[in-house]
Amino acid sequence: MLASVILAGCAGAGTSSAPVVAADCDELRARVALTDDERRAALDRQQDAWKAVLPFLVAGRYMKGKAEAAQADQRQADLQRELDARGCAASAGSIS
Image (cartoon, rainbow, N blue to C red; front, side, top):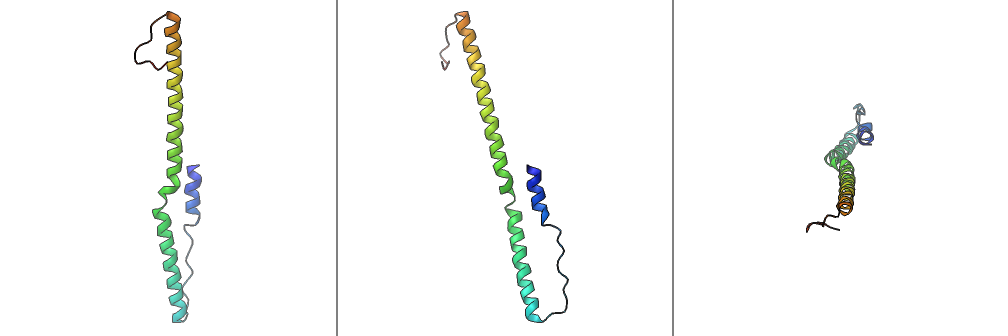
């Protein structure tokens, strides 16, 4: 999934710029302004690139924490069953 995000980001990279041909000054100024806008937008995308990855990291950590909590709950239930089977008194810290 992360690879597709990276590849999507690279899809627009490497486009060649249009060659500068003889043009009047107004057209050249317009091209400069357009190129400046494109550059600014590209820098904004570069600065915001981390935002594309962050949701995947958060989701991954959430799922890992959820799985670990479920495992701990299962271990606790198994231990409680073993305590009950042996007739042991529950400790003060037990959640049951």
